[in-house]
Length: 556
Image 1 (spheres, rainbow, N blue to C red):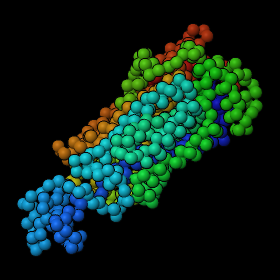
Image 2 (cartoon, rainbow, N blue to C red):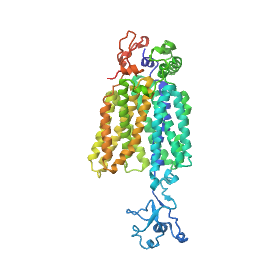
Image 3 (tube, rainbow, N blue to C red):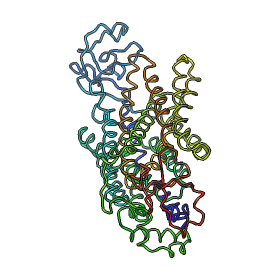
Image 4 (cartoon, helix red, strand yellow):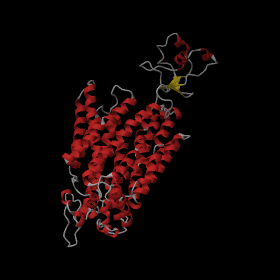
């Protein structure tokens, strides 16, 4: 009997699975908010040199506007210069301020004055990250994603070695701890270091919860779980815009998005370990205990009565009972190497293009809080469409097709004049919707492609590559300084190339999850020595009492 057959017998999408899905849905709320935190705390408000420079107490008799006139030069658009001030007060400008451009200036001597009409405080206002230090404010976002990138690889390996559940708790506790500590940083360096460790630890929650959700549901419900999984990000993105609107101080905003992890820590006690992982690692007794709990909660208690714990070991036949798998196993065999290469390219491109579009859609004619809400809202129809598309066309066509549409929309915008703002915005929004579809699809698709013994390593590797793409996206946008459409050409080329790559991945619709490397390689054999073959879900009828050793997944 295959694991999917047993799972169907105890209801592959009953109350037990819905409980796990709901806990993980809200458990990743903080992670999604931390991904967008830099959009608000790293903002640099309008600023100019502190105009309190006094010349023998004379400026004390002037109004604020007059002090600025004699102290701060104006730019071509009439606004005060951000980084320079006059070397000496220019009192003659009180009579004629039109000739200030030729006067001697120096860098700000007494700090800066910031416009606090939108934000009470940001990183820039806290540590004067402006002018020559302007890049440091945005650098914190890059540092955070480098942590996410390395953490994805670390937690992918650790959860494959020590189990999904303990590593999920570790991710929740450390992620919340570092997040809260960063809010009370006393220096920029301290904040940057803590942001790195926040990203490193908190990323484990998403890659582990995604795998747990997939490994506990039946084949026919995996696509629904994939859609719900991706909607958890949308829910967080939309909610975060409201939280950021209500909390304008960067310290309390960081605290407000870190504290909800307490709920995830409390509800962790109801999260089960992966029965697949337990069986694959020779812990059949524990696996039976969780399967029995699942059956009882789903009101299918009689299903587990016919199976003994020792018989579970026959469901997933691993090549070595206590073998520890590592990332090297992703490249040791031909088909695994091919799978790692194709999924890696796809993940890198999906992440780079998705974040590149998000960073580049700069105006809906709305304020930044409402814009952030719209960015989340437009993902809802895009991600809901995944449920239909995965059922109608399968994973491979949906993945390749959505990336193809993203590439085409980006290419179209290259040829539309920039004064056609409405048309360009509509095309950009359509492209963003398609990128949301591709992102939602690739998460589910990849978790179905990798075998149980390497699934967490595979998802960790893919998440690592994706975060590398996120880090690269802002650099791609800087290429617009060379040519205004350069970034669009790069992103469009990435999307189109990834569509071609994704089309060469094997289809997983209606197929059982692979359990071992041999399943992926297509070389696992039955008791008579003959190769095992793929089986569709329709072949499960009557399988409760008939043991099968069919090949779970074969690359095509």
